[in-house]
Image 1 (spheres, rainbow, N blue to C red):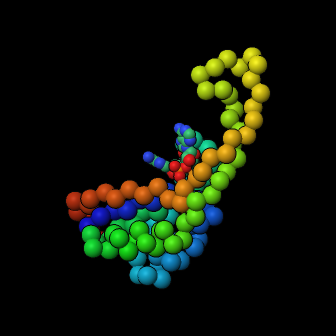
Image 2 (cartoon, rainbow, N blue to C red):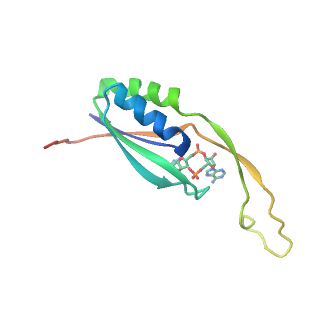
Length: 109
Ligand code: 2BA
């Protein structure tokens, strides 16, 4: 068994949750915050059999889009703030960041 942990954008989370349930997967949604953007995102925990992992990846790919996002850094990286003028920088936010973790034991009562 594997635990798939997928960090996705909030905008995609409803669609992804519905697609997973429709395909017969059990999932838990956690509200999370990205370390870099400090913005809300959603982390899915999906416990499934080894031979279903690729199918779950397919569902994630089909429901999560890469988007460009403008970020205004609050301070210069490693520099002085004296002459610092903040300006927005564009970053590409996934899609999904997905981890597959082996599950040693699973019990469900
Ligand atoms: P955030 O940490 O808020 O990152 C949002 C986006 O900002 C990232 O998109 C990436 O394009 C950019 N970014 C992140 N750290 C950066 C840095 N040090 N320098 C320049 N740009 C940077 P994604 O890579 O698609 O990540 C989307 C979200 O997925 C992340 O939100 C984080 O919550 C999660 N994530 C991504 N990689 C992870 C990892 N290795 N471990 C844990 N969570 C991860």
